[in-house]
Image (cartoon, rainbow, N blue to C red):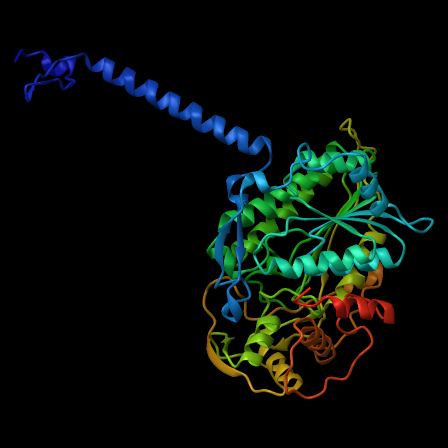
Length: 487
C-alpha cells in the first residue's frame, strides 16, 4: 500500500463478485462531499416540515389530547393517558368554517342585546370558568361568541354538556383551536370584538411533568396567537382579559400572596408558562398598545367544575368507596388552599372586563399612547386545610373517606396558597362572599343531579343558584338540571 494512502483517505465500496469483495480507494474529500449533501437534504426536508406545521399554527404537539382515567387522577391529571387527535381534525377557517349561514350565526351570537353592551370573544368557553362567564355576560345583555377545542384532557362530554347549556342561552361555541390564526382573523373580520376573555389553556400542575409540550403549545403559543390577531388584525383593537394563575407565586413564602410579591421562582412548568404569559403580555402592551389584564385564579371550584380538581374527584372517590390521597408538607402541616367559589370568580372576571380600558394601537403599528397593563389576584382570602374540605364532603355525602396521607412530593404542588385581593377590591369592587361549606353544598347538589345518582345520603337542602352556573331563576334551574351525564 502506498505511503500517501493515509493522506488521501480511503473509502470502501463493496462489489459482490462470486462472494469476493473488491476494495476501491477514493479521495476522502468525496466522503465529506457526499455526507454534506445528505445532511443538507435532510435539513431542508426537516425545515420544510416545520414551516408547514407552524404556517398553520399547529405544532405537532397540539395533535395530542388527554383523558383522565377514573378518580385516581391527581389535580394535575397524574393518571391521564394520551390519545391522539389528527392535525387535520382541528378547525381550519378556510376549510371548515364559512358560508352565509355560518357567518349569520356568528354575528347573531356576538351581537349585544342591550344598548352599551360589550362584544366578547371567550376562548375556552366550554371550560369551567369559561362557561360560567359566558352565561353571566349573556344574562346581562352582552354579545358573546365562544371558542373551544374540546380536547380530552378531561371528559369531553362534560364540555359538550356545557356547550349545549350555552346554546340554550343563545351563545355559540365554535369547535376550534386558538392556534388557528386563519380562523381568528376571519372572526375578527366578521365581528368588531370590544373585548377578548382568554381562558383557553392547558390546565393542571402535575400533568406538566408528563406532557410538557402541550403546556407550551397552549399556554405560550396559544396566548401569542390571540395577542397577534388582536394587535395586528383587529381594527379597532380589543381589550384583553386573560387567565394567569396563582401558581406563578411558586416558592413564595410571604403571605398573603400579593401582586407585589416576586414571581420568579415557579414550582412547576405550568406555573412557568403562566409566568411567561405575563412577560409576553408586557411585551404586547408595550409594543402594540394592547390593553391587557391578567387574572391570577386561586383554586376555583363549584358546579360544572373540572374532574381533575381534588374536590371533584374526591367526591367521586368517596361515593365509590375508593381511597383518596391527602398531602402534608415536610413539616407535617396539612396542605391548605384558598378555595374560591365560581360565582365570586365570575364577578371578578366581569369586573376586570368592565374596567379594562381601551387599547391604543392600530393595524398600522402606531399607538396613540400607553395602554392599561394590569394583573390581579382573584381568591377567597381564607386558606382552608384540604382535610377540612374532605370533612365537609364527608358530611354532605354521608360517607367517610378512605384517606391515605403522604408527604407532598416535589412535583409542582405548593404547601399553601393565600390571596391578597386588595387591588381587585379597590379597582373593581371584587369581594368574595361564598364560604367553602356553602360552595361545596352547591357543588354536591349539582354533582348528584348531573350524574343522576341514587344514593342513600343526607338530604341536601336546595339553595338558590345551586347546580347551575351563576343563575337563580327557575327557568335556568330546570335547564341546568336537564344537563345530565346521559344527555
